[in-house]
Length: 161
Image (cartoon, rainbow, N blue to C red):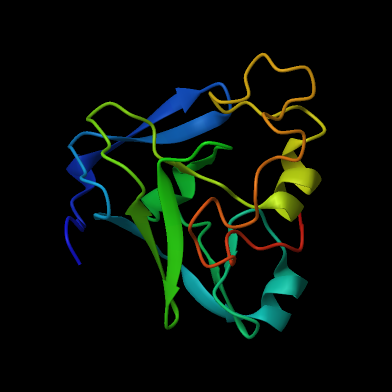
């Protein structure tokens, strides 16, 4: 894995139109490991009971609850035109760059259609690709489930509060 870092100084959390966002302080080449989505590993059944917006499905049996503030990747916002993509490897979720990312850019990936419909669509998508469109989505559906190259797992698809 190229480019991976656990160095908190490689990232900056800033306010965005969508809330807080994660920005890079360094360059990532296309295909670089950017960050790991970390948190408590829960059974999907326990995650369904607990609920929350920071649940990331690993597979049909396991979900990561990334609500802890030490999980910087929780600040990565949705985009219908993302610069990152999430892949699962075993019980881990790894975020990779889809293209070269320059210092100062906000990191983003596509959360998937179900999450988009449940949490984003009603207020309108605030990603840079959609800002200003009438229905809040660039393509009218909030993008694809896998963000254009992922494995389809994305953020937890069962909305919970």
